[in-house]
Image (cartoon, rainbow, N blue to C red; front, top):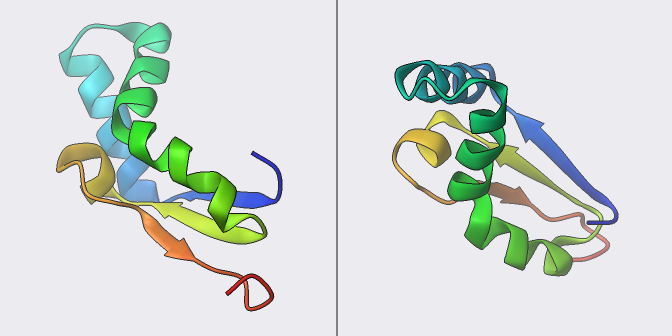
Length: 75
């Protein structure tokens, strides 16, 4: 998606790795984990052009929504 800054908090990256290790999925499993965790977010991204999306541990573990920080120009 154009003009969206995607950031992962360190705890989120660790949660992704932990899920992959527990599921014995390896590198290909990482993609599946990310897609599962962010499927709703991917559909919302076009309206956040020029903004920042922060993926937290809660997004990965508890299926919460990420933090959306709208650019002042798009708000």
